Each structure stands twice: as structure tokens, then as C-alpha cells.
Image (cartoon, rainbow, N blue to C red; front, side, top):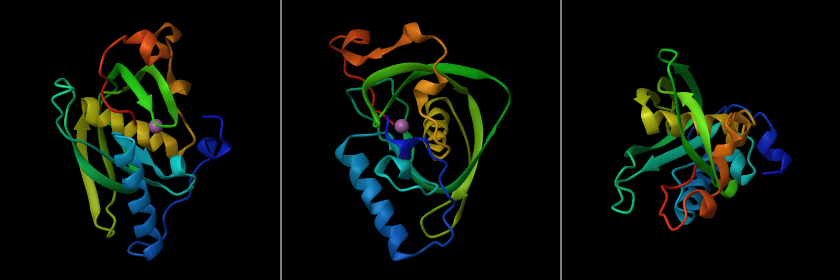
Length: 170
Ligand code: NI
């Protein structure tokens, strides 16, 4: 946070199945895996392209965390399904050590393309919908602290959740 590349609007990916796109997605995958993240957007590794990855597998350390299928999503579009907002804790690999209480649409429909260009269309709710909204915000230069409304619920992990294991950051 503070790097101007995280505040820029990213450009669409124009061509699928290129070595450059494959290398970008591999770099994003390695970065997310190394940092144990739930998701990552290309601008978080300094690339201003509209590509995100996300996924959460079940982990006994976080029995309450919902599983999210591992997904590469290029040129994503999100539509809310209904107006209902839900607040929940978020962290971000670009804002390490902090958590904030962030409102998001509870249900969304999202679309985009896989690495090979295949069309993806899904409906999601809850944590899955939250992760997708968080990652796609990165493509428009929005970091989750910009969406925090109640700053009494924004702070350092060790102060907000002393001694607790938390779900992965996005
Ligand atoms: Ni993030």
C-alpha cells in the first residue's frame, strides 16, 4: 500500500494463450502460494492487466472458512444479485498485518475468461463473492481500506485477534 501501481486502473488482456500471459499467471500463482493467500490480482505484482486468481481449500486451522474453487479469471465483470450487503473481515497481501471490516454485496454474478480464453460465468455468495469483489477492486485501483466504513474495526491483526489463526489474506 502506497505504491502508485496499486491505485491505477488496469488494462484488459487482449490475447489469450500467449507465453506472456502464461508467465504472468504462473508468477501470480507462485506468489499467492508462497504467501498463503486466498487471492491475488496482477497489479499486486506490478502488472497493470485485468487478471486475478483466487481459491481457498479447506484447512483444519480455519474450520469456518468457506471453500472457494481455484480460479483464473481474466477481464472479469461483476454484477450484484440483489442489493443486500454483508460486512466481513478482510485482509490483503498488499496491506500486510492489518484487517478491516468491509461491506460487500452478499450475492454476485461474475463472468470472465480462463487462461485459455474459455468463458467463465458463475454465481457466488458469502466469502466466495467477497474474494471476487476484493480481487476485482484491485483492477480498478481500489484497496479494501478505501471501503472500510467503521474505522473502529480496522487495525493490526495482533491487536484485533490476539493469539488467533486467521483465514488467508487476499
Ligand atoms: Ni488484496
